[in-house]
Length: 292
Image 1 (cartoon, one colour):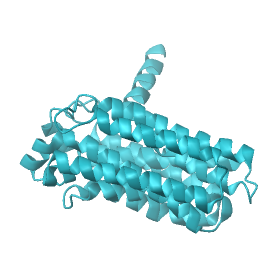
Image 2 (cartoon, rainbow, N blue to C red):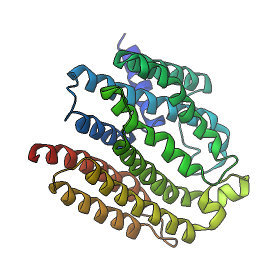
Image 3 (cartoon, one colour):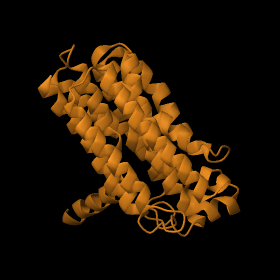
């Protein structure tokens, strides 16, 4: 029996590595920020927080797992990604699809626990998330599509609490969209030569690293602008501007860490700096609420 438990534990760890579970921190704080802002005029139950978190984790895990299965053949050819769980043989494609199915079911059931509207919207949401995996095969603007798909999270959380849409929350989704797209472009700079050789599409492969990084910088400027628009739209307390300034500073640091001639700090920029930015946003939204 102990060996069986060890096997299950190892499998869980392998699945966690496959979907980069820790990366959930990038988008989840944006969704929770939407919940906090909705709280001013609505009174969500504790269970709503729980189901929103479960839905976010389920959707993100399903999307990441689907991407790993669909891209398994491509990943095998790339020395940077050949060590991933499916190309390396730690998981089979069948196991990957089973995992995607289970995570999709978790997302759909979590959405159903929130409301009938959320349940209905969960199906197109999954479609948008899954379709991203094919965009690199035909458009260099796949990064923007990824941002759009993940950027639906704050709107989804807002709808879950309020049952309505809001122009103000759209600014939060746009900030997440440009934030995700911007750092995804930086991350794609690692595979320029590979993408070009394989006939894959990415902005860096099309324009070169230098121009792609300039576009990434502009997208992150837009992120700050959209977050300021959130501040105005929701009449937030000025203390939020302190957090917004810190986010802007971290984005500048991120672009200083990664240059066309030096990509060695890309993991630090991608994983650590971006995690801090997302958490700062949520803390800023939470703190300003206490001052209002």
